[in-house]
Image (spheres, protein in one colour):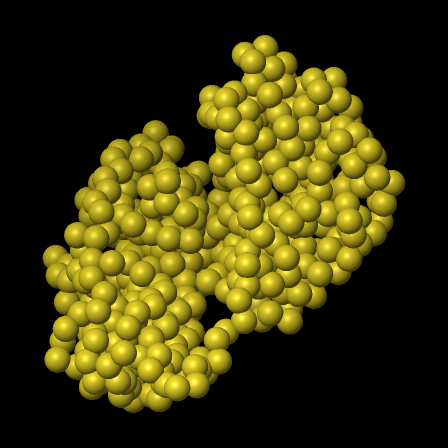
Length: 502
Ligand code: ZN
């Protein structure tokens, strides 16, 4: 079936339970009418997925935890999008689904898993990575190809945004799943779902009003309220990736461009009448959002109270030339922090340590050693919880206690665990005296991919100003220490310098 822009919702494979009366405890695809029978989490219960490096994840009720030692653990969960077909043309039905990995280190990775039908049940092949924080739209199997469609971003686009749609084609042969093509088109060329003809009538006042709703893929919800010419309208959408705002008046005149992919709007109402805000979803999952808006009367004789002005601390100024920045997260952590300090010292390199409050409390002397050696400290929260979706009170609990422990030794850099944030995070951070600090080169050293892999990741991506993410905490960091020594040997020989980032 072809997917048209207006009928997208019907094209999305959504997970659904087995029909009444069927239960299936073994990992085999039930025979019968495959046109009406949809696979579900039940069908892949106890399925073991090989992850490379000898590790594997076995699903229980759709979830698998894989520990890398210490606090480092990945949580895999079945994100749905089940598809079935006969990918390897052996006459036995095969299954495919999307597996999400809430990684211990640095992201939220989406993979396609293909499980081939065998005599003894489904056998999973090593998954293929689609990307980090990419909303999946659909997964299909036709003939000898599986295709995954998802929203993605260019290299220069922030992690919190998406600007292209990518289709990856996969084939199973010789016991592996291979990517045979990856094609992208700009998202701006793709129309948003049509506005919902039935609008929610809401009231906008000078104090921000918040409404919460849930949208499925391809759906749109409209909100309308009366407004007067000259009033200032402010709108913020707090939502997962792939949900966007547009603003228009009731005659249909757009106040935002129809190809914008925006989540905030601020502007002057051009004419007295009704303003409509549309929220549209191109996110493959059911997505809850919060929409916050206010109208302030610019012409009132007494000006409406202004929201408190929050100044984000300036991001650290970067040096020019052959300069890169090393950062180490999740520590301090004996014995690796001291080993890293020794290696840094050997090359006269400085680093920024993004520390966890609970680790600082346990190992205060390691923090003193970091500072004494000329390195700097950033805040990585108290206990490594994702800041996305937190209330400001929760956020402050996670961040301010660590800030207090660091005192004057702390800098104004905050690195959110997993790089996860929502549209409130940078504002909460600014109010707590922080600017957010992410990274450019992700070594994924926490997954212990081997010393060479860590070294190659950094050396091959070396470029001026790049921020390198490594870990001294969260488990056994022997590989990180060994890799750092080699990285510094190679890069200092090439003339690179390593000042502290923050
Ligand atoms: Zn971390």
